[in-house]
Picture 1 (cartoon, rainbow, N blue to C red):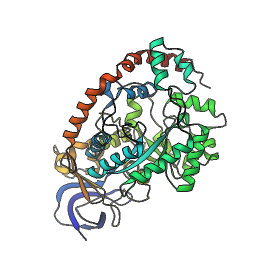
Picture 2: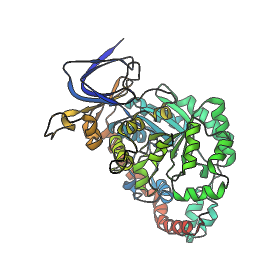
Picture 3: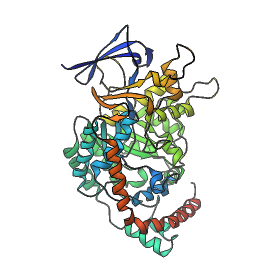
Picture 4: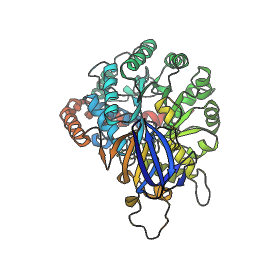
Length: 480
């Protein structure tokens, strides 16, 4: 067995993430073989690799094409400005950025295919990018069949648009969606093409508001039959909350329970506008909630009640949604932001540090990998580790004995990463990906996108009118 030994000045050990050190980690066959006390150590602080439990593998940042700060319902339409590019290149840039930010496992809810080849072939290229970089991913096949423009008939919004814009958006949404049976069949075809040791293929209904009852029932039935996990957006914005209250007078979550979707196989992204009694239902069912703090702030969706979710027993994870606060996919910064917002005020401790560590490091792993376990530094656990440079993290210390765990929550970011290890393999070392030339890939992606942006001139011209129409549409929609 090939082994590697790492002597760390400190690490977070066990399920309570207790600070220990110095310690020697021995790795072998992709797992932690032993954790032992040692006399001397390198200036390294080891913790489990972070998990990005909700993302979409988009290669470019939102503000690069004018979508920064737009509300979700408008922001989604801006994505159509992006021309189709090589899916391997786009995924490699995105997944590489996630790895450089400290995430060893990434959910890829693939809601916007490039469409240059059939989806199974495209998914295989995304999986190849993940393998070359070395991160674990879930590939959730996006499933939807209604409401492409608003949460209701498109005609109501189209009637608010001037003629040119009306034609543009009607044309873009004219094709009928595939049947539920065809969409479920596509998931199996993607799994045959892309699934592997580091890639778990999942069912990815985009959200209740975008899926017909027939499609949601087909997803629930397929998940029950095959054991596949389900990944779905839920109650991300106030407008989705208002729609759900109108559509399901007896409750959205009782409906999802009746059709068989509320199981431990389900991950719900966002839940920004969830209510206390609904949290109780999710906790009882064992559903994972992926909270996306920066994303919800950046596209003006709100602040999810993370602390109350935890208090009510929900299994909460963290996602970046491709919209980290600085648009850099820094998972360490995301954890710090979530901690600052939800830890409690004054001397109150709503979410203790070990609870936030569990949320960031462990709770989302099954949602991505499809398997329980991991997110801990203990013998036998997967060797998915993040090593921080303690000299850089503590560069301006004025006194001895400062806790690396306290500094982790005070200042840690991607610039402090010495190494990211996944399944025992080095993925990042000193701000460089080991598997690909990330800078070259990013430069090439931007060049290709710039060459193709002119093809969206008609859409770009129509978007201001759409923004005005959406503002009128949602202002007039009754709240109940």
